[in-house]
Amino acid sequence: MSSALETLRRDFGGDIIEPGEAEYESASRSVLVSGSPAYVLRPKSVADVQAGVRFASGAGHLLSVRGGGHSFAGFGTNDGGVVIDLSKLANVEITDKERHLVRIGGGATWGQVAAALAPHGLAISSGDTKSVGVGGLTLTGGIGWKVRKYGLALDNVVAAEVVTASGEIVPASAAENPELFWAIRGGGGNFGIVTAFEFAAHPTTDVFHGKIAFPASEAATVLQGWADYLRTAPEELTSIAEFANPFAGGPEAPVEIHVAFDGDDPELASKAIDPIRRLGTVIDDDVALKPYADVLVDGATPPPGIQLVTRSAFANKDSVPEVLQILAEAGASERSPFIAVRSVGGAVSRVPDDATAYAHRRAELMFVTTIAGPKPVVEAARPALEAIWGRLAPHANGAYANFLASATEEDVAAIYRTETYEQLAAVKRQYDPGNLFAGNHNIRPR
Ligand SMILES: Cc1cc2nc3c(=O)[nH]c(=O)nc-3n(C[C@H](O)[C@H](O)[C@H](O)COP(=O)(O)OP(=O)(O)OC[C@H]3O[C@@H](n4cnc5c(N)ncnc54)[C@H](O)[C@@H]3O)c2cc1C
Image (cartoon, rainbow, N blue to C red; front, side):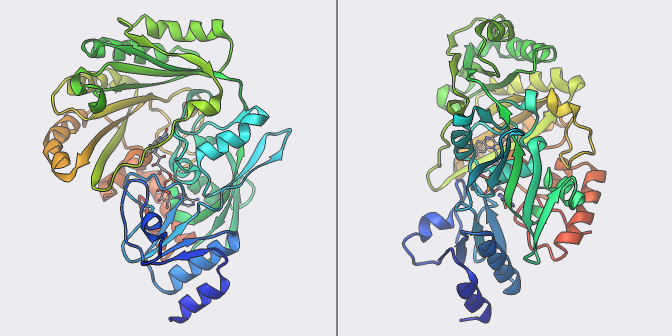
């Protein structure tokens, strides 16, 4: 046994899972991607995380950090290296009732958070799926059902505890190591393992949530009207448009406008949602009042062999008409990807550009295309996908790291503006000069 491994076995209080063990098969894969790591470490304490980091770095292993394991690029696993799986660090604790401060373990999922906060009438603007991790989603954004009112998940972080590449515990907040605090709000897992986040939660009532569906043939007018309306709609309203769903008829699938109105007053909710109902011929409407925690859905794990190609970009105000026209036309074509368009703006755009490392404050919409299937199906669909993105290129901006299945240099360049990247690279050099944390949209130490 190597001395690094001996030290790990002595210092590590969590689980060490190796090939051949019963748990290995499920522990080796992240939700969307298979892997064959040499060790999966499941820390039970911050000291375990420190021991795991020192082991990976000391033995020169490739390191992947797994929060909820939902990365489309498969960052939560690797072949032959070490995976630090944070799922046992999932405690959710209200630390200050007056200020609604909540300390959340770096491996918690948003379903765990919503369930823990619901009895206290609190919530955090996050994502739409229970099993998605607080870690991955927050470190690069977090566009959820309250995004227009409360901003991105990362806008609600007030402090974090980070185990850096040297194995030290470093606090990050506006008062302590502010450059690290800036970098982890947008720069992903590049700077260390966040073992705990402190969020400022907000009070929540039940919310009006559901979908309003229109025929596929009305896609172009519904989408344009929807985007126009959102500019003046109350910020309590957050909305996602989905169309060309391959499981609901592909190009024939209805255009679904999903809405969440942050409030339980039926009159105010109707006032905010009715303009969407008037955009076309409503063929389904299941908007209803429900607890916020019930709005989040269960995520599905695709069977082995199914690939997901997910790609994203943003549209600013002046490019919205072109982007929506191209997406509507794409959605009507035989080989269309599944398309989702999320409203952002609102509170997201009131945060100054340089306050965090998230670089897309001015966008009105974020859109995502996804193709899924066995490799031959995905390969056959690629040329049509490339053609759509070729048409979008002159109008689309950047990329949203959380909805990207690839991690090329071009992807990283699309995620960050040049000045943001330069600043991140300087922080990276300070906290991870050897680039131990490289299983992400990687910032190279400058
Ligand atoms: C079904 C589904 C629904 C989704 N819905 C939304 C949505 O509504 N809104 C949205 O914005 N995004 C959404 N996403 C995208 C999601 O935010 C990203 O996939 C995100 O990376 C998932 O985080 P994770 O912790 O689950 O993933 P992981 O694969 O565990 O981690 C992703 C990245 O973050 C790093 N990381 C995770 N935790 C930590 C930590 N504690 N410290 C340091 N690094 C860490 C990992 O190393 C990796 O690089 C969705 C994804 C899926 C698959």
